[in-house]
Length: 562
Image 1: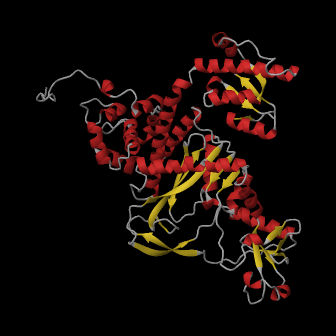
Image 2 (image 1 turned 180 degrees about the horizontal axis):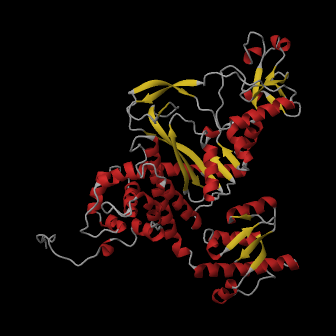
């Protein structure tokens, strides 16, 4: 029977904000794992202690900002309207149902005045990364880096042409030393210092609206004024460990090594491997990675080629003779090393004039072919080989699942397609807040998802089952009996808990049963104080330790029960 609906909006109900927010809501998960109280101590020096009107609590202020990035609300005015009607937002901010929502200008004026020159955005981001590291969600052992463009708030047709000085690359001092050493090794004199002259300049387009943005011209990319967000994520769960903004006319490889060093110093990362695309395929990058003892996997870059001519790869380099061998078999000996760091290998013009394949080699008037090789080319070739082996393929395959997925989520869900503000410093703040929002969301979801599977009781049961298996393998190793002959009586997991809890010291165990245990629980092992080391005493994460033992064909690894 159809009844006429009764209006119930005016009825009074005894409810609380706490009861209106679902138990599985994202903001509840975030509030349960992230403590934002550290923000208060970090910014209290920016507030007056004994004068002025009462300020909005800085923790609430930054929670408001993070809400906008969590839910992709680009307008701060729209965000205030959402907070006014959204009970979950009010609960997260600590507001009651009838509390007045702060004005949107409170956010904008604090950003423009109080926090304009502050490093609080970077500090908040760093604290969240450290939280992920402490929770075992990031290790910094394998990192992936890429860049994405953010459209600047500027018209691409309104610009002025300007001459700007070319900024020297940071590696030039190291390159000069390498050139000097290379010339000395070949018996060449040191290059003379270049005469003093005006600094090199280039003409660029400068936006009349946002002068910090850069005009981007890239294949397959839109033209206009953009910023680049250079982002690094951890290979374990794609936690963002670094974000750095530059104008779009800055090459991806320019800030790369400096940002790696920053992560090692700030978070204490022991970086073992990195995965990047072909935009980072430069000799300076591969040399820098080798100097830092980092295993680099770089995407393949298609070489430039002139139709009708030989590819450079068809000129084979002989390292022992230090010569290039052309496709017709002629030797191109070393001639010199120029200031840009390139060795020059030159052919014999008398042989080239009558060469049957000269038309495919060179059209120079003096019948001379010159092949160049960078002084750091050997490191580039070694790094290129990483991409072709089993480990390198596995690392590079993971790149699209980590950093590219991170950018896709940022653009689709967190409003990271466009620069919300103008100026490099403000876009850097935007990138830090967007990355922080993504990180706290991932941390909350990962910990809430894994919580039922990481209870101490379950870990004890898994460990007890593993020790039974370990005893069996130990008997096989000592007596040489078959696996069936060495089967031990299955131990009750409940009775085994006390024995497992009392384990101390170092135990040497075979790899095979540890692999079985690893299939059940990888991220939970650190929560019961197990550290893994190989036979050389190098402590690894569990996954890397197993891979290294397999590669070294070790039969056991050491597990320390704390």
